Amino acid sequence: MNDLKSLNRLTKGTLHSLQQLENITHDTLDEREIVAKQQRQLDALHKTLQQLVQQHDRLTYKLKHGPCQVLNELLSNEDGTIEVTTEAQQAAATSSVAFAKRLKALEFVQAYRLSGVTVTTISDRRIRLRWDTFYSAEYYEPYYMELEFKGQLQVYRHTLPYFMPVADIAERWLNDDMRHFVDEIGDMLNAFVSRRQQVNKLKRDHKKCIHEDMTHNRSFNCVQLTLLPSNKRTSSVYMEIFYDDLKTALPTRVQLKDDGGKRTASEMRQIESSFQKHELSLALSSTLCRH
Image (cartoon, rainbow, N blue to C red):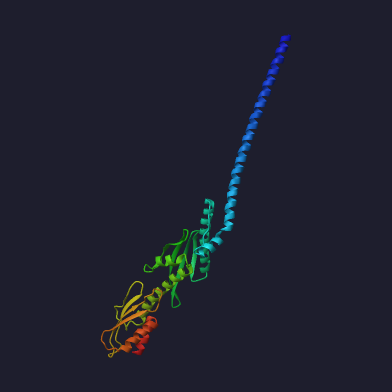
């Protein structure tokens, strides 16, 4: 009986010890898990801290070399330089330069919203320009151009006449003086429409005074016509009218040939002068009144 009691006490003691050992083991595992979890949290905090430090460095650098400073130093001064020593600083500088140029483009957009050119935003990198053409207080066809921002403004596509030197104008003015670029295009378009409409008006108003074989090129900067004699004392005059500048609506050169030799040198000079000073229909009317 005593042996049985001793066995029971031993068994209970052993089971209790095993239970305590198991509890200790579980506690150890829990502590290890807690320590591991805390370590993961510390690693995450350390990584976040590093990111914040890097972000702080970028923001600090941008404050010193931000878009406004870049715009002043680089766009206004060809010799302006910025010293960078890290990749983060280089990225910030590149971003600042691009943003500064975009600000310059946005200023251009705002400047023309209330002028003769309509500006429409297509996307964050593309805008559309619309030039309205007119002659003698009447509007004619519009022309369009899309500009795309890729570090600087570029002509993406346009509907301008093929004879206009768009690429040359863009290369010279688009990113240096956008106001001049827009004005240059607008002046050429309206001069082209003016020359075209002048030719049409001349045909309507003086159909009986000019030969029907009147010709011109696509840009209307070269016009050939023959003035018919107004009476027996005069002869027909073959004329070549040139506009050496695509922005002009009045001839820069007039070449004459008296087919019958009946007109004096003075009369020929008067015809030439009239066509260089007036639009075509008015110039011919002035010539007919004199002769």
